Length: 396
Ligand SMILES: *Cc1c(COP(=O)(O)O)cnc(C)c1O
Image 1: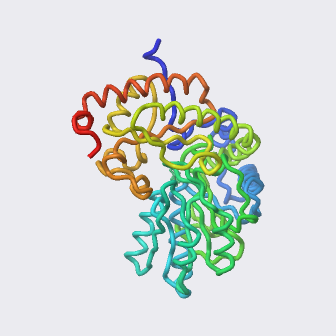
Image 2: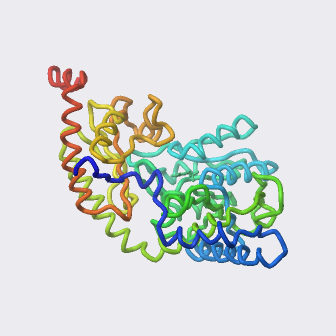
């Protein structure tokens, strides 16, 4: 029996698509397949479906439907926000502020902009992964055109003080973008109240399909296109619409929002049980904050004296899907840039394990993981020369 067990604890990497979401998508592959740009009546249904999805998104984040633009996912939305704002506003300045713990979709886009005449400040974070408002204020110059700070971190779950950041940026007339890919569908977001100018999301992080996302762009903001071509998305994002994907995103965000508070509470409890259980393993530390400043489904710990990658292999053999560092960097020997930014030395950052919970996670799953992980860690430590050294010499 045990061999067939499969416990998915990598919801931050991607989620399954909910059956109700898939059901709404299917007709748009087989029957309602008309190109929304065509004028015959077959395409009327697809146009309406896109409008409905736009309204559903707008309602959840409190913006106008006309401020919602569909993209090919979270990475595209992030790239569009950064490059689009940078190139369209370079007459005003060439300075951008972000953080050291962003997703690579932001960091690599920033590096690209640095090679093209822009200057980027990467704000440090404290030991819990939070930026300091003072640092942000001090980093702003008269050349600053954009601040891009993620809503919640994908590795250690830290939620940033978004409203405060929004207020500072609005007052200084600097555009504020937030990569909210980990937060949408999980945290309550109000772009008006939080003074957010641009926001990225991706459907596959809230039980929608992969390959579709949104960039919210506040009305009146000057931004260049990223994808040039036809006149889709009111001339701002070319390419025949991914209708089924857009329909799925709309349905998924609506469902997530209906359940948000209840699921948040349920997951927070499971998360805390899992954290407390894992911290019983000797020489283990929690990465990221506790309580309300942490994503409800995020657990990230470091076990000293072992390698995260080897934990993953042994957990996989026990049917547990987990992650170490971020998906994009696994396979490389570099420890996570996020764990280094919160001040962990390389050797400790290497022993990280991220477990992210979601709507199919049960208390039995948590219990099973708590049964398996301590023995896996013990086994690996017994094979580890670092552990051996430590037992002989102690912490030197
Ligand atoms: C997953 C993720 C992305 C990338 O989204 P894709 O849809 O995979 O392109 C960007 N930012 C964060 C914080 C993420 O978690």
